[in-house]
Amino acid sequence: MKQLVVLIALFFFSGISSFSQQWEPAGEKIKTSWAEDLQPDEVWDAYPRPLMKRSEWKNLNGLWNYAISSRNQSSPESYDGEILVPYPVESSLSGVKKKVGEENVVWYERSFGIPSKWRGRDILLQFGAVDWKADVWVNDIKVGSHSGGYTPFSFNITPYLNGSADQTIKVRVWDPTDKGYQPRGKQVSEPGSIWYTAVTGIWQTVRIEPVAENHLTNIVTTPDVDQQKISVDVSTSSKFPSGDYAEVRVKDGEETISVNRAAVSEEVDVYIDSPKLWSPESPFLYDMEVILYSEGEVTDRAESYFALRKISTKRDENGIVRIQLNNEDYFPIGTLDQGYWPDGLYTAPNDKALLSDIKATKQMGFNLIRKHVKVEPARWYMHADREGILVWQDMPSGDNTKDWQPRQYFEGGELERSPESGANFKKEWKGVIDLLYSHPSIVTWIPFNEAWGQFKTKEITEWTKQYDPSRLVIPASGGNHFQVGDMLALHNYPEPELYLYDAERPTVQSEFGGIGLNLEGHLWEPARNWGYVKFDSKQGVTDKYREYAEKLKKLIKAGFSGAVYTQITDVEIEVNGLITYDRKEYKVDTEAIREINMEIRNMLESRKGEN
Image 1 (cartoon, rainbow, N blue to C red):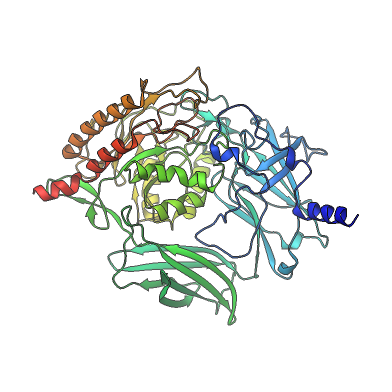
Image 2 (cartoon, one colour):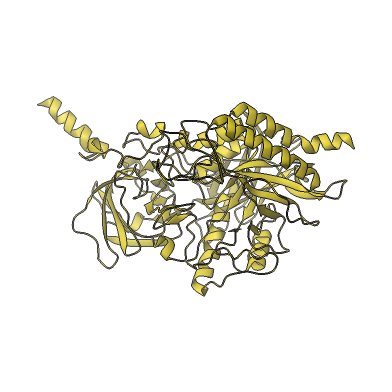
C-alpha cells in the first residue's frame, strides 16, 4: 500500500498525463534519427533565450490538451486529444498531424504549478513563437494577445494566479496561412513544388520565470571594432528607473577583464584592449553578466555574451566593391537554409538537431548560411555564433496577392499592399530585427525575396539601414532591384551567371545550383520529386557542383563578391539538397565539396598576393 501511494505521488507531481505513454509521432513520412528517440516529457528542455539567460525557469513544453474548432466558437467544453508542444499541429511530432485552415482555430490547454520557492515574486509566462495570432487565458481570465509568427512574447501573470496548487493556461491560435497577409515564408494550404506544409500554433518553447517587480527586459549589444569597444544597452520593466543602475561584467574565459556601471537609461561602453575579433575562422565570444540594482539591492541578473566583429564594403584595387569582415576583403560562400524538418516542420526535433545543420554546413567548407524566408529560435543563432558562420537573414515573405514575382529590374514592379498588410509587415520586421540584433553571426538583413510581397522597397531598406547601421542590407534578393541598400543580389539557376553588375555596391549570387538527386528511402514523396537539374549518383552531383564552382571562380574575378548555393538539405519534394531531408545521408562527396569551397574562399587572398 505504501509503495502504491509513492507511485501515485510521483505520477501526480510529474505533471505528465496518463496519455504520455501513448504518444507517438503521427503519419508514415520519413523522420530524423533524433525524432526516433524523442521522449514527450523531455522535449526542448534547453533554455531558449541565450542572450539573457536566467538561472530559474520552468519548462511548460510537453503534452497539452488540444481541440480544433470553428473560428466562431468559444472555448471548447471537451478536447480532441493531446498535442506535444512545441511541435506544430500539422507536424508528425505533434502527434496530431492535422490540417487546420483559415476557418478554424486551435485551442491549447494545460495546468501547471508554481514552485513554492518562487512565492512573493512576479511570474512571467513566455512564448518563444506562435504562428500566427494567439490569445492567452490564465485561470479563465484573458491576459493578452499577440500577432506575429516568428517573435517571442510574454505576460506578467502574477495578478491572475489563484491560491491553489494548479493554474490553468488556455491558448487560442488562428493562422490563415496563404489566405492572409501575414509573413509566412513558404507555407501554403496545398503544398507542392517549392511550397511547403503549413505551420499552425505553438512551435517554440513555452515557459514561466520568476522575477522581481523591477527586472531586466532586454540586453542589446553593438560592436565597434574600430573603436575596440562594445556598447551595452540595458532595458528594464521599471517605468521610472530613477536611481536604478546596471553592472556589466565582461569575461575572457575565466578572467574578468572589465566591470562597468551605468544608469539603466544610459548605454555602457566597454573598451577592450587587444580585442579578439569574431570570424568563421575564429569565432571568439566574450562572456558577460548583467546585474540590475534598484535602491541599492540586486533585483535581477542574467548571463549573456557578445563578439567584436565588423561587416562593411570597400572598393578593391581593381575597382570592384567587395564585402569586408573586420576590415579585410572576405568572400562569403554559403548555402540556402530553409529550416524545415520532415517530422517537426518548423520545429527541429531537439537542440542537437538544430545544431547539426550548422555543423554540416561548416564541415563542407561553407562560411555562410542564408536563412531563407524563416526565422529560427534564438538557440539556432547562438549555435551560429559559437560555431562561427555568417548569416544572411531573410524576412519571411507574405501578403496574399496572387502575383508575387513580376521580376522587373530597377525601379519597377512593386506590389500594392493594403494599409493593414503594410503596417503588419513593418511591425513584424522590426520585431525580427529586435530579436536577433545582438547575435554577431548575423551580418546582413534581407527584407524581400524575389519580389514576393515586395513593396515600398526604398522606404523599408532605408529604415532597416537606419535602424541597424552596423549591418549590410540586401533590399530584395533576386527580386525587383532598386538603387538602395548595400548589395545587388542575383538569382540564377542552375549555374551562376553575372547578368547584372553594380559598380557602386557588391554584386552577389544569392541563389544558384539546385542540383537534384533522389535517394530511395529518404524521400518525402517517392513518386513526386524535382531539382533544377537531376543526377543519379553522388559523384554526378559532386562533379556538377565543381563545374558550377569553377565558373563561379571566374565570375568572382569579373565582379561577384559572394554566393549562396541552393540548398543544404532536401525539403519535402525538393531533392536539391546536399543532405537528405531526414538528415541521414550526404548526397555529395563532402571532402571534395570542402576542397572547392576553400579554393573559392581563398580567392581574394590569392588575388591580393598576385598584385
